[in-house]
Length: 244
Image 1 (cartoon, rainbow, N blue to C red):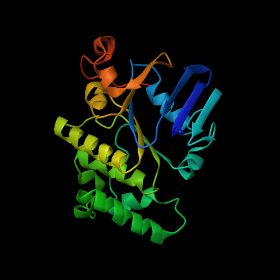
Image 2 (cartoon, one colour):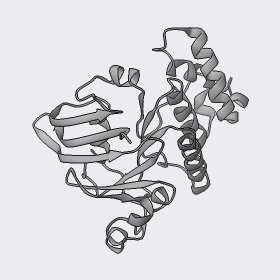
Image 3 (cartoon, rainbow, N blue to C red):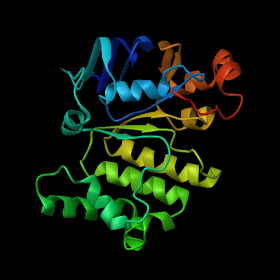
């Protein structure tokens, strides 16, 4: 089976600063993979590299069998990749519905966007209930649902989601994880960075350990979850937010 996403000996960073030092891994379609590692390991940088937000010095990114190294974010969206970055990324004083409309702004037909909005509101009934509310009036968990729903408007085959649990209470985190698992069950591939490494691995299919911009371990999530070395280094509690 062709991997949905494969990174081959990837080097990249910011200007003259190299963060990724030969990062390599592959993830299968219709799966959830969680990336963990210490601060500065390059977790968020990997996502930016995949989505075309930084320069690639060398190496390859392959999406569903096609090389996409160096493509722009707009081109990656056309290829079926969406990116949900850290923090809150809704437009606070626009309504839920108008936030969703913005997610489909690059679609050529407004009628198609309207139909897709109805579809994602079926997936996220809360959004239909609060469609006229300003995004700022939603709870943190509801805003995260809005972000994920907006990412789905372009019908992606791969979602990159960075730290979905930041600022959320444990019960809201579980709700976000349940949503991601439902998307996986519907055929969407998810690559996630998550500070709560233990909880994230527990709901994932695969896990990747990054350190100094290199893939140190890549295995089924339950194997990493029960590995004493991984547990000692990374699963003792909530990991701190990464700065790169």
